[in-house]
Length: 243
Image 1: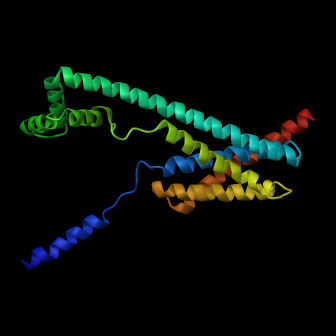
Image 2 (image 1 turned 60 degrees about the vertical axis):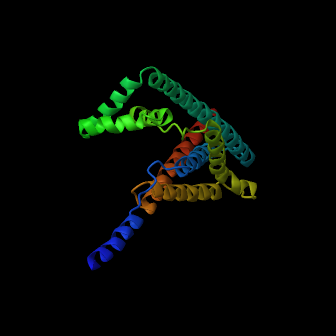
Image 3 (image 1 turned 90 degrees about the vertical axis):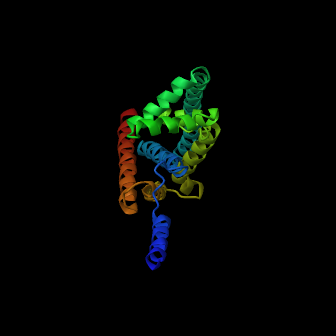
């Protein structure tokens, strides 16, 4: 009796401590990557324009135009992509729903075969499939999960995807412009702020990966810095050629 009382809390403690990362990333991944995209693209745009010996006003206008154009483009692209994906999923669910209605026995046998293929004993697999198939909506959800790898009750929203993409991209793209709007007269404060933002985004991304925060942050800082350096060089070359 004493042994049982000792082991029970240990098992409970193990269950409480046994947690995993959110492997799908939830809202964090698209938000951070949207901001990162805005940071890199607008920083590269502004350094490219600055490299062409453009005036400060031209650099700021380019940054604001890049922010607006990129945010609307991201929102439109994300909305179209997610809406198309959702429409495809809904069409496949309709096909599965019709099959369940017209050929319930065949669909039940198909579900049993899926469980058998995963190592469940044939008799048990057939019984599980029979019980799950007794409720049409539950059967649809199970077939969708097993055959299509989707959750019918958790389909992505095109509107949410578009709004979140617009907001995160605009926030990231704003960072390189912000120092100029606050009165900076040189490019370097914008570059430093953008690089700091890239490091922060990379560090946050580490929450959904196995990498350390400093490695992820430095990697993103290096990639963004390289993009800015290359576009500045190209801007200098084009500015000299055009001038």
